[in-house]
Amino acid sequence: MRSPVADLLADLDAALTAVHVEWFLFGAQAAILYGVARLTADVDVTARVPAHLSNRAVIEAMGHRGFRTRFDDPAIVEQHRVLPFVHDATGLPVDVVLAGPGLEDEFFARAVLHDVDGVRVRVADAGDLVVMKVLADRPKDIEDVVTLLRVQKASLDLVHVRRTLHLLESALGQSDLLPAFERALARAN
Image 1: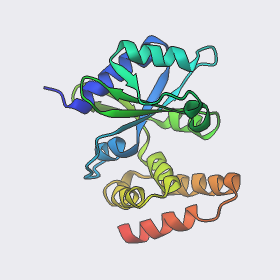
Image 2 (image 1 turned 90 degrees about the vertical axis):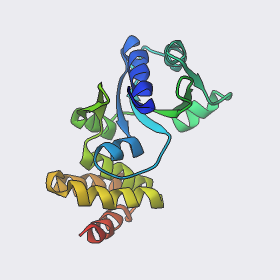
Image 3 (image 1 turned 135 degrees about the vertical axis):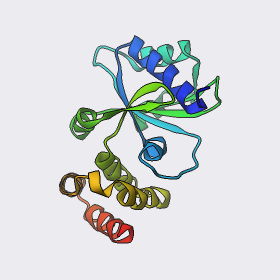
């Protein structure tokens, strides 16, 4: 018997594959796959929607696989670039983040296949997940970073993580991402 998350991921994959949308799992569910002990009921994915496909077409495809939107205002999608759904069969929420060009293209290129209760799922690379969680900067995300660094340190490309965070700092006009990462790394050690 599959887990509710695996059931959701199977339906999500069927919906997005039907309209030729690439996607990968990130967030807490990805952290769990990398060894972070975490309680969460939500699922976060990034989707690359082809230019010829409308958000409405994605919403309809998701609807055919048992997902309903958790919003009434289409401006939410435009403002936040997120399609929030709930999976009727499991009751679990899922946020489909619409990918933009640039960094997310690199995340797609490095995403790796994982087996989630018999469902093959592309998951953000562990180093990229660290970057995303440092960028999110919520206390629970920083705790996930510390744990990821403890359990995945041998396989993480820390040079790449630092380089990506440096590029993000430059692009965003911030100077707090690398220090946050270094503090998390010190705690992990």
